[in-house]
Structures are given as C-alpha cells and as structure tokens.
Length: 363
Image (tube, rainbow, N blue to C red; front, side, top):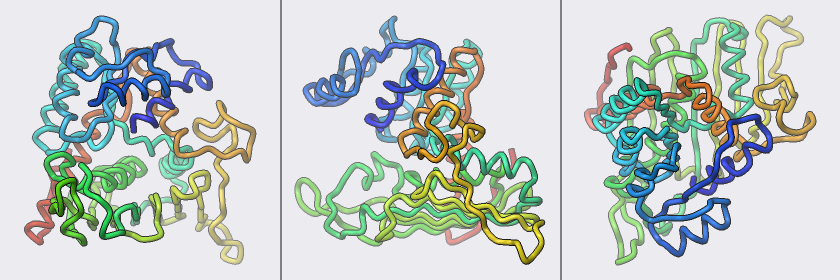
C-alpha cells in the first residue's frame, strides 16, 4: 500500500488539477529500508517515529497505510494534531476502535480537519459508472447482488506466516482484508445500508511456518455472508484468499427488474450491461469498454481504448481527497462510511460464532 499510495501522490499532479503539495516524509520501522523507499518513491525525507512527524508544523496530511492494529492510534492522534487523514481500509480492527475514530473525525471536522477511508475501488471507472447506471434506474428496482472477492496467495499450505494471519495485528483475515471491499461496494453501488446479516468464517490451514517454527493462524481464510439491505435487496458475499487460480477477482453482479450489471476486477476496464427492456430477440449482456472521456475519471488519461490499471484508482482517490481538502468539504467515503462497513464485519463474526442471524440497527 505504501508503494501504491506513493505512486499516486507522485503522479496525481501530472494528470489532475489539484492543490500544490510536497511529498515530505515517509515513515517506516527500519531506518535503512524506509530511507531507501523514500528515495525511490519520491519522498523528501524518511523517519521511524510517526508521533514526531505528526507533531511537525510542516505536515498537513497524514496518509496511513500501516497494519490495522495501528489505525486507531495513528488516526486519532493525527486528527487531534489538526492533520487531514487518509486511511487505508478497513477503518479499524474492532468496532469499538472504529467508533472512537468516528468520534475523533467528527470533532476534527468541526475544526475544518478532513478525513477519508480508502475504499479505492469506488474510484475504478467501471464501478463508478455502475453506480451511476443504478442511480439512473437503468436496472429498475435492484433485487439481488452477488459479490465475490477471490485471491489465491495463501492456497499453498506452506506459505509463510505474516502479520495478516495474526488476529492481534490484522483483526481478521479475508473478512477485514477483502470482504470489507465487497461490502463497501454493495452499499456504495446501491446507495443503501445493510440491516441484517448471516455469516460464516472458515480457516482451511490452521498452522503456518513462522520465524521460530510452526505458528497458529488466528484469523479466517474465507468468509461467506448473506446481507439484507434497507431498500429490499438481498446480497451474497463470498471472499477467500485460498481460491486457487483467482489472483485478484473482485466480481460483482447486480440484478434488477429492468436490467443487470456484472464486473470483474481482473478485467477492470469492462462493465457488462444487460438491458431487459430490449426486444427479447436482441437481449444479451453487452460489453462496455470504460475508456471514453465521458466515463468517470477518464478525461484526464489516454485516448479511447487505451486501458487503465489497478494503480490508477489510487491516483483518483488522492485527487478526490486533495480537491475536498482544498475546497474545505468532506471527502467520501467518510469514517462514518468505514464504520458502517465495520458494523457489518462485526455482525458477520458474531453470526458465524453463534451460527445465527444478526439484525443491525438501521441508521
């Protein structure tokens, strides 16, 4: 994430008209490693103590790409110091941490300090177009959503232990890591709120090679959930980091009374649209190549048909964040949006533990 965000900070001004800024300090744990990364990724200097950096008078924005266990502490401190905050998803490792972060963000907002959580897939042009089509009633009444986020980087039983497999540092496994994206997309695309949850978690490999021998895996490898939304739609969510052959497949299908959409992040420039109002002999999914200047974010990039990649969504995210900060408006998604996702994640865990249906308060 540090590499992806650095790339976006380095390039955003070359493509979008944004307020001027300086890439000032890159913070990391190892002094030599972070100094080398700062030189490579365009930062003026490096440091190992984030508290000292946040306290500096020449720092206005803090971009947090640390593991989830550090999100709350860094974000709350940065907001209290008057720094605008961009924070990678998920918002936190627990619901209580997320709630404290929203309180800090609301207090900071009263002082003109802005915050945003980085659900970057909102900035994929094809998904931004999908939201526009749904809002424009091209699908009629949305009835059903299928969202799957499948990866295979843990399919090998001998893949080594990492911080993402320890509950104390990651909070959860595939649930927080990639289900957070899928759940945010369900709520974002439909502009709706999850009200009821049924979930299941599973760990396929319970032990992995650690630095000092075998170490227990304390998070999930895969998760499943059925979600009811306030507007009446029902969504299924499936995520896994053990799905051999799927590298980064965020797959979304939305079915309405008049039409349907489907998207796959492994083909990020394409959106498939089925128009149910066409004459039956002419019906079928049609491919929309989302590379025209009229499509979201595309007017700043290349000629039609010249595709974008995964990294471009981060550039769009930084652009939107900078424009909001410059205009003194609240960027989206907010910490409140991150909390809404966190509530669903917590409900899935609770449902899985109790093998029951969990109802959420409608907000």
